[in-house]
Image (tube, rainbow, N blue to C red):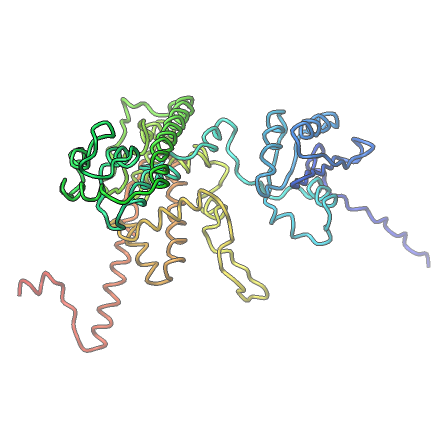
Length: 455
């Protein structure tokens, strides 16, 4: 009996999804690049981290016919190379290092760049990086209220050098002039400056202390080193104020370069949300109006959001969140949702991922500020705090704020608390039902407060 001919086994080949892709492993002192094997006799090369080395890397990729690049986004070493490749019209994908380090057997930088170059397996999900035009405000800090950073230290230096630790606040200019020019007693010579009694008359109108109390506070046993420090404090304070003014002008110029997406005549800026604030004027121009002009919606209407918070969101995310399919994806990208790890049907962990992002930090700070808010979000934060504890409540509220931000920026609709009122009403009905059931179990009958007062 003749045997049947064996069928030839067809080799299984994986499709080449990105034939012109290159992989880059970026380190602190060297960069390893891998291109397709047929593009160069030496497909894996090592480059330095100086600017001329990065430019040479970009030239070599262009010679090899590479059009797309995949790199790890670890630390800040990838940013200069990303900007150079982006300017050369390369399609750059910055991926999370967590997604490419889970494959075993890669212990060297050479193997890392080879894995990042493999086109047959596709690419790990890339992180969101707004276009270059939307990232112009990213390096600039948000205009801070009051005396931020080192300027605040110089503003309060006069009190630190006072004769008593509990001395009352005095007029900063008068006190610095008094102490910095050697005036130490009420009977000072006119050429050495005005005495404490005269300087006390120039106190700030918000100071509640009397002129006599301020004059006593201005008299002290000051040492030469204290006077030297105080003479430098006004100059340092004015220097920081000049820097802050220049930064505000730069932010205003960059925001002015964005096209208006809303007509102020048809859609005027909503009135500022009525809430108690402890800060002074945020910037030297109307930053809130500029952000509304670019974003179409006023995010400061959301409880917990101040103008610097909205500026941080815009500087990091831009005005387009369409790369995220839904608010759940956006919250997951920020690490504000549970990272469920299940093995064998058993839940190993539900903790959130450790994500360091300025947007997530800003949302957590905004959530923490809702602890005493009378809004619906404030009630949600307090319920979560009573149920889960403060840290988990902050994360849960930040997650809700992230979903609200995604909805407002994608739909370009104003914030309305009525959409959240339904959930608040459901919670109230559940609470009332639970309390009535507990009262019946104890032999009582719950009566509304209005009916009790009428009877």
